[in-house]
Image (cartoon, rainbow, N blue to C red; front, top):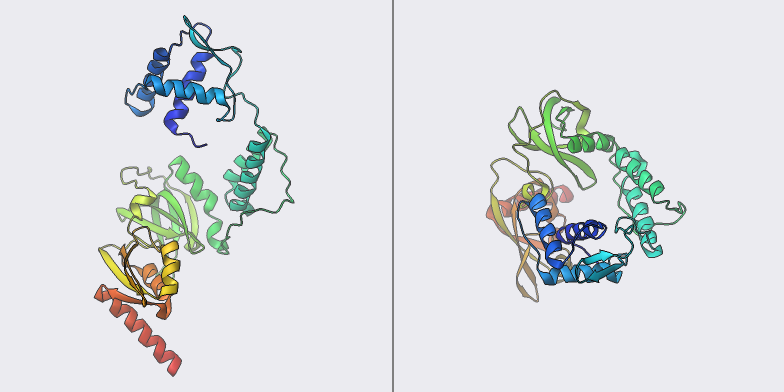
Amino acid sequence: MNVTINANIRYQVIDRRLRDPNAINQWQDLADACGMANQEWFGEHIVPSKRTIAYDIQRMRSGALGYSAPILYDKKLGYYYSNRTFSIFNVPLNNALLQELREAIILLKQITQNEKLFSLRQSITILEEKLNLKIDHEQKPIIHIEHSLNEPGQKWLDNVYNSIRKQIALNIDYHPFDNPPLRHILSPYFMKEYNNRWYVIGYEHQMCKCINLALDRCNEIHASLQPYNVEHFMDHDQYYKNVYGVTVVDGNTLETTTFKAIPLLSKYLITKPIHPTQSTGLSDDNGTIFKLEVVINYEIRHKLLSYGADIEILSPDSLRNQIKIIANKMQDMYLA
């Protein structure tokens, strides 16, 4: 059962007070303590209602959260633990939860295999030992992760990951496919995998803008003496809100891309949209019209091209003409 961060904070506050033999814990006392915790965490003094506190107590007692707290009530003292040594943080894990943790660790080990994210893999091993989890390493995983064969880029994953965590700027010797080598000074903000390639996105100090760099084109990465830039930080969802793939091109504006897909492909696209901005328009026996609110870049052009004759680009005219030119070149190649 999912628990929000607000509820988790309330459970921690209630747990701490119910272990204190000197505390008076009527519902209002607990609510006021939760309000002070909200002020500390979120900067807002939000005091939960009597109903919310009663519901929290009921859930802590019920076992629904993975433990059955021994909570009693006294008219003068309010709520308290019958066993003062009890804490929601000292509850042994049940067998079902242990099995789920084992399966989660197997999945995490798939993601961090071959020690490309060594620090994460170390943390997983420590967790395994601390919880005394007996992992059957011969057990076949239920969920299979598609792994990149892009080895040159993966060797930098751990270095970049730790630099982001510790907010360390990087000197990166970079060799694009179509330009001479150059050096970037980058404050890395996040990493992204796209089409079996890893990218680091961050603020480029010399260019004074955010860029993405493919890790497989990095010849050397080491810490920079430049201070880490937090002023231009953006998260993944903000940066890629209207972008398909990884390429963010300066000057490219957001456009509405409209295309028509044949009936069979339409069913596929309805269940697996190309982009979060995708919407569905008119539909008939010949197919369905779709719209995307994206910047036109290399990746979206080639994604749409991958559907071949199963789609027709309707707008914008610039994209329709680009696809037409590519289609004509392909025709010339195959008819030659």
